[in-house]
Length: 348
Image (cartoon, rainbow, N blue to C red; front, side, top):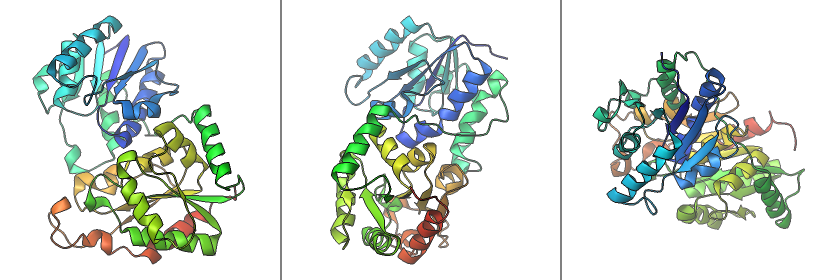
């Protein structure tokens, strides 16, 4: 059984993936209370880990800018040697994620038997695409090399005080009081095969304003503001458009303030769940590795809406039946799901 002293946890993919990996940090800290633990993430994901009580440091790898290119990556990895890590835990297989700890001369390198696995010293079978369990559970399985088993996944994001203050100011300037029932909407996703119709988001939002006296805020990343605008343009009731205006820390603070988040399958789903906010999550693609079983929000208060429309093979963005898995989900169904969540929540 491995007994490390300085651990580097590596996860270089997207925001939701990083958040779903945070139970690994907690489990490592409980098992090794005195070891040095750092996590290596992309800059976009930094705020999801900053303030996490189970890590000592957050390191950044920016493959698009500062570390773009082979030589920049080599220099970055060599610079890691000064940390004297003895163990690297690669939670998601990629060529870069495996090269970096090898180049950094980290003696123990644990990961999946995929994407240049010969760079690792300990390799686990990669079966995530089967979708038999949650992504968070898959990452926790890697800890068996340390003798850590039977850990319940509980993702964690620390809401930063400065971000909470900024959100309080933004909401106040927009006439949203602390006593108002706030509903968040995130209408974007990484692929068109995951995006529910903007006019139906708008329909649900309008009904929530009229029938539930809710205030609506729409969020999206800087590159996805078009999807937020598409919803707001179709609404008849007012909404606060925060698309492209929030960093991840501020998004976490906003979602903690919301009574519920309505969202496509995307990173904000896991931000909301990690700060304790219920989610009505809309899933489309019928593919085991992309299913709610693997990627749904963790917790008991969430509602997952996923239509089975008979697809044998999901063609994703090349769908030839006009994304029936999404269009089959009606605004009535989503509205009822949101109301069911709201009525279980205490008033703000």
